[in-house]
Image (cartoon, rainbow, N blue to C red):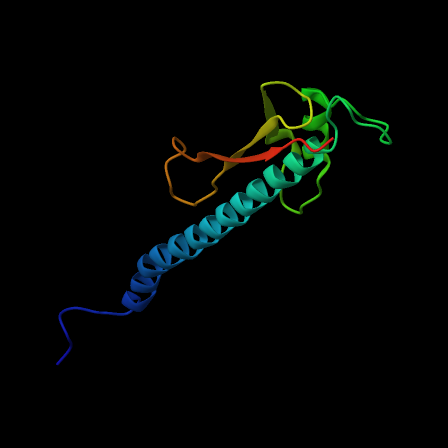
Amino acid sequence: MKPIRNEEGSALVEFALSSVVLFMTLFGLMAVCTALYSYLFVAEAAREASRYAIVRGNKCTGFSDCKITQAQLNTYVQGLSYPGINKGNLSATASFTPDNSPGSVVSVTVTYNMALNIPFWPKTGRAMQLSSTSQMAISQ
């Protein structure tokens, strides 16, 4: 007797449906790991930029770029080379309390706009803004 229902090809359909969920999870995990890597870079860049700024105050001597400006700091941060980081989406801002003289405090905030690329995820809400702040006293 011949079966009423034929189940040929059902494994292919089941694999197709389950693979969509598997690959979305896998690529989503990779995107989250990339976001974590980018955040670690942003935090390290903020620390490096504040170290760069504390030795380039108003009384600085011996460096070609003494009396640091906002543009110099931004150029320095964008010059830090980490693979996978889009330098065009990276910016740094500094604030000096009370001014740019020794003993004052410099606070550097580095911001990175990162795009999350997760398949089958809505295009709205794919961008992430990562930010980190570091604060140190100006030494010279």
